[in-house]
Picture (spheres, rainbow, N blue to C red):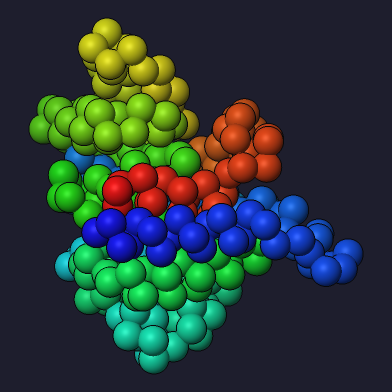
Amino acid sequence: MNDQAHALRNLVQHQEKVSPADGTAKKQAQSKTRILTVTSGKGGVGKSNFTLNFALALQERGYRVLVFDADIGMANIDVLMGASPQYNLYHLLKREKSIFDIVHQGANGLQFIAGGSGFSDLLSLSAEELNYFSEQVNSLNGSVDFILFDTGAGLSKETLKFIAAAEQTVVVTTPEPTSITDAYAIIKMVHSMEPDVRFQLVVNRVTDAREGKQTADKISMVAKQFLQVDIPTLGYVPDDANVSKAVKKQVPFSVMFPETPATYGVKEIAARFISSKPLADDDAGGGGVKRFLHRMLNFLK
């Protein structure tokens, strides 16, 4: 594990010393790719469906978005779009393909990387393998505006480390008591690992805005009282029968039903997310992929 940390530290330090050779390279280097994880305390809350349609809403607003399916054992972003990608993360880790080779296009041209069986081995790589993976991930910097990692639900070690390494995390929950409890549990665990992670809440399958606000307030008040953490609410997605219809057709609901309540909810969330103040590290130019790699280094020490 120390060999992994040493390899990644050398890589990051090397990247920081490299100066762009021309104006084009400089412009690309200055482009900020923001990394966002989307997670939930338990399965079955609609996390992956939200991630997919949220990404499409950001893309509709003119942003370049890449969805990275990092859900161990339950990767399904491709299924939700009816896509059958030929290559996934496994082929990258085995050095059979580059990271750009495993980027596929789904609904409305949305870029995505399928998880397959490779993600479960991500945090147990050798120093050489980790170095290669880090170089590949860093090559995405500047090529997209947002990388959205759809993580696994629950408190697995791999999921927690990945969330803690990212700069922002959207926690998806529902009004169900077990979902609320599990959402707070994952916030608490990640906060104990990395206090600087910025959380935002999305409440899915609400009957109305009042129920959504009550649900978010419960989590926010407990987090404020016991963790001294402010957790703003990005918004609510209505319980919508058209969502399940779209899932059965393997078409994103925002594509199949552009005027359904759930679509409006996700688009409002995307607008609020874009208008929210970015992290201070982003303003200083230290965010994005480089910051993600630094945090991954810390967890490998």
